[in-house]
Length: 88
Image (tube, rainbow, N blue to C red):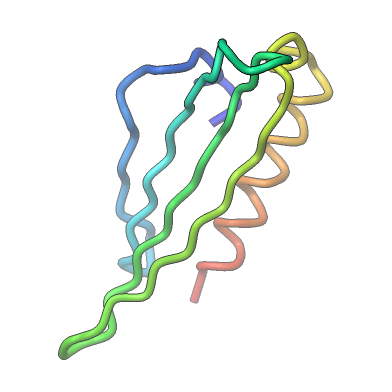
């Protein structure tokens, strides 16, 4: 996701190896003081026959720090942890 830190682009949805779905997206809030960039991950897990579990993770950063090396490294770490938590 870190390489997709350009906000308001197409959402990325993927099927993880265990069958869970992962949606990632970036939102900007330029009118806030300070302007904010919010990275989000939404994990969907089907539990047949009639249940779906959803998990949502967000990472918010002031806009001026969104493209810094430290922020990108943190985003990579967060995404790695989310993927590890959803692995079978």
